[in-house]
Every structure is written in structure tokens, then in C-alpha cells.
Image (cartoon, rainbow, N blue to C red; front, top):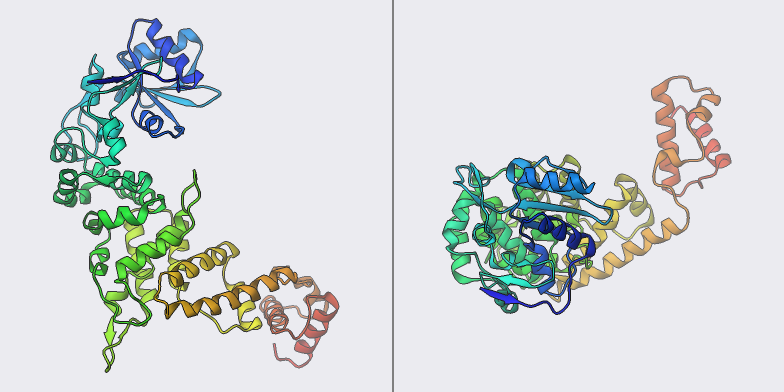
Amino acid sequence: MTILPAKENRIPAYVGDILKLIEKEGFLAYVAGGAVRDIVLGSVPHDYDVATSAKPEQTIEIFRKAGINFYDNAAKHGTVTAVTDEGDVEVTTFREDGSYSDLRRPDEVVFKSSIEEDVRRRDFTINAMYMDADGSIHDPEGGQEDCGKHLIRTVGDPAARFEEDALRILRGIRFCSKLGFEIEKETLLAMETHREELKKISGERIASELIGIVTGKYAPQAIRTGWKVLSVVIPEIALCRGFDQRSSYHDRDVLEHTLDVLSEIPYIEGLGRDSELAMAALFHDLGKPECFKLDEDGTGHMKGHPLVSMAIAERVLTDLKCSRQFINNVCLLVKLHDTYLKPDRVKVHKFMCEYPSDILNKLKILQRADILAHSPLGLERMTRLEELNKISEELIASGAVFDIKDLEIDGKDIISLGVKEGPEIGEVLSKVFNRYLEGKCPNSKEFLIVEAKKLISTKSV
């Protein structure tokens, strides 16, 4: 086993204090897992996990004696969480997992006294390093070498690791997306071989990993590598790979176009990509193979593909038990991604009234990304998008309103004009709002009242 001496102690004081406190009581304690990986890669971990020889009840007693707040809702699995002002620290007893009859959670957890036994149950070598309180790194599985090679490799036999926990298959792809690492050949082969076992994993668990994959910095690379695995979750991915669109507007197959669109969705360091936008980019064209038709000269057409792609997104995200709001927003973006109005102020204004502003802002980003992933001929559409964006920006800058409730008149004003019936009041307001949108009157109470009177007097309501 490789032991790397500490160049400097990179463990925060509040975590180091937990380690020393446990060690003072005669137990072993180390920082383990992803935090050590991040330190080796030169980044600052977001959270820290501690592995210890102390049993959960012993850890609880240590924290009680020291006056440290904690919660133990996962103690049966060996985890007690210390609560500090600087952050929570999960403290887990060295353990060995029993069999995995559901391919996700061990049927039993056996506590061990050795960190080496604990490490052997971990998923990938890059997550199997651990660190002393003084900052020395212990590397029994070659994790540091794999970090240097930018390689994702399982601890031990990959087939055994994935048979224990099928979700590790998606975790490997997520690490590829997050870190930009390649997946080791035998590990990838085992992922593909065991991919059908993902069907036994809960939708919520898969959704969490899928979101992590599409929002990662290297998402296109990860999906390109793991497309066979991901096709178990989204079968249309396999259909899109190598699918020639037979169009002068596209010089890539549907999957490569999709990955290029995803690469153009902005990535913010430390935050990732917007999850709704990234997911919409993944789904936006997956309905093309189903809609594909050739005309007489051999040109491909895929009319109606936004609605088919939206239906695919609805089906998959519902099966994965994503929130209804998330599903609705992703589906709306997919539905609208190919909608380009004529650059007319009234049409743009009415369109902006139909949808929430956050959806419209995301739609601009998705459409720009989609255009950039077209052939040079397809890039001509960017001029239309820029014209539409300019009109929308001018409308916002002018103080235009996009909801009937923001008019300078309301139902009380219509009642004061002699309209008594509820439905009729609503009709008058709706038609006044439409006249405002068409530029026939400004959003001024004086002028809106005049328009309302005209409608009422002509009984055109």
C-alpha cells in the first residue's frame, strides 16, 4: 500500500478536531472517499466523510461527552453525523457489506476493525484513498495513480462491484462527466454487460445520477462513452446514435448534434449547468428518428419532432419520479425549442405573455445552443434569433407588461362602467389587454378605460 506523506495538512480544523477527538478515545479515524480524491486533484472538497473503527454507539458517546451536536438517523448503517458551525461531518464505522439482493442496498452491514476491509467495499479506486489527521494519504488501491492517469477503475473485479450495487454503473458515468476522466476498458465493459440491472433500481436514484451526468462539465464526453448504459434509461439515445438526418442543415448524426447542443449550455464552475436546460438539451431532438421522412430528392424532414421529443421526456422523467415542476419545465423547453416567430413586435409580445419569464430566458439559451450545433447553413437562423431577442429586450426595457393583472385597470374599474356579470368582466379585461398588446392603446388607466367603454357600448364583449 502506498502512503504519501503530507506536504501540508489540507484537512480543515473542524474535521481534524473530529478525527483527533475519536483517536483520543483509542479508535482509528480517517478522512475517506471523495474528499481525499478532491484533495489529490487539487480542488477543495464540499464535504468530508470520516471512517472510523468506533462503532456507532461509541461514536455517539464520544460526541455526547465532547458536547458535539449530532444526529444518528443512519446509525443502523454505521453512520453518525456531527453537526458543527463550519459544516456537517458524516462519521461511518469501518464496514463490510453483505449481499445485495436488490442490487442497491446491502442486506446487512458487518462492522469491521480495519480500514483496509472498509476500502475494499468501495466503488472506484479514486474513492478508495484515506487520510490521517496529519494529512498523510493512504492509497491501497492505486487511486492516486488513476487520478494522475485520469482513469475511472473499480476496486477489484468490476463485475462483482456492479453486481453488488448496480447504481455504481451510473455513478461511474457521473464521475466521467464531473472529472473528465476516461473509464477503464474492463470497467466500461462490465458497465455495459450489467446495464440491464439498472431496471431494478428506483427511479429517484437513477434521476439523481442522470441529472449529475447532464449537468457535469464533461457531460458530452460522458454520454458519448456511456451511451449503451444510458440507453437502458432512455432507449431513444441508441436510436439517435449514427442516425443520419440527411439534411444540409445538419452535418452530424442526431446524438452528436445533441451532445454539441449540451456542450453549448453554459457551465458555471462550482455550480454546473442548469439542470432543466441540460435535460432539455438532452431530450430536445430524441424524437427525430420517429418523425423522419425522406422527400423525393432524398432530403430528410422531421416535422413535429419537438412534440414527439417532449412526449419522450415526459415518459422518461415521469418514470424516474422527477418533480412535476421539473418535468413541466423541461417538456416546455423541448416543445418550444424549434419555435421561431416572425420578428414582429406584437407577435413577440403575445408570445412573451404565454410563458413564464424564466422559461423564456432559458429558451433563448437552448435555441442559441441548438443553432450553434447546426451546419454552417443552419447557422443562418442565428440572425432570426437575435432579432427576436432584440424585440423582447426592447419590450422589457420599455416597461411593457405581460400579464393582465399588471394592467392599470382591473375588475373594479370595469364594474364601475356598469358591467355586473363576472364572466363579462373578465371578457372585457381580456379584450382590453389584447388591444394593449396590439398597440392600440398604452397601459394607461385613462386610455384603457376609453377602450373598455368602446367595447361595452358596442356590445362586442
